[in-house]
Image (cartoon, rainbow, N blue to C red; front, side):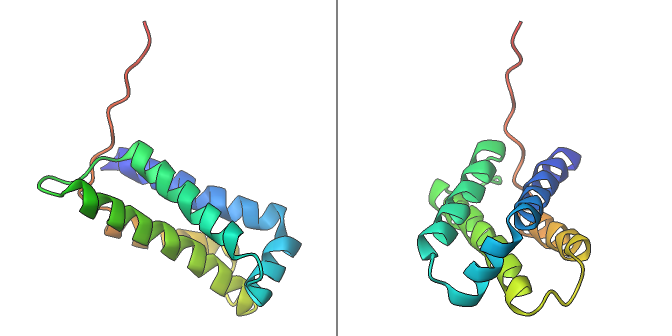
Length: 119
């Protein structure tokens, strides 16, 4: 369980750091929605991170697994864009902490993939 939390926390903090680094771009993106291809690309990257780090929960089909991680990835991006659009009503740190809680709850039961260590 703690290994999963580390992966998810890194993902949310990585998105938050990108928002800080390119604040003007993301602010424009949140206000105009004229770069939908970029939003889709962000969702794809986050979903790929989850797919690379996690495996389906016991009894979960591959299709359900991919739907679940895509749902979570899209939610992460949407929450950050809404945060920008709504005038940043809470701090980025508070938002990221709350997202970590929600993402961990949503992906609970999906064990981390075992990593093979090189000799």
